[in-house]
Length: 90
Image (cartoon, rainbow, N blue to C red; front, top):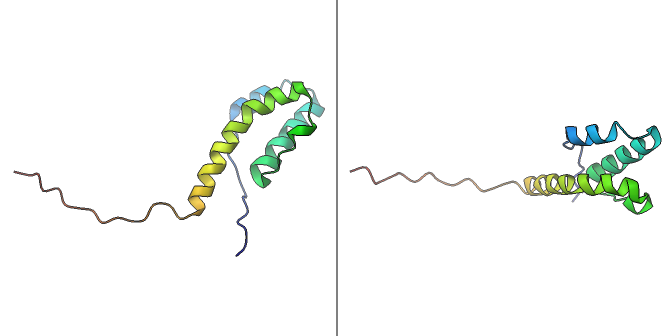
């Protein structure tokens, strides 16, 4: 069984708005954190400063929620059920 690879993720405007005020090097670090975690589930946040950590703390919960949704979707979703007639028409 091959491991399913994640090829996309949701990126929020708030992340962009926060990052555009960062110096170039910090912005690149922030984007790399997001991409690596969202696509490969590799958390490199141990290697960042406390300053950059504050940006990461705000982004990670959104990525985690979307990752959970993606993993649940890979399971096939809810089984199809038969529609039962509504017998309360009197």
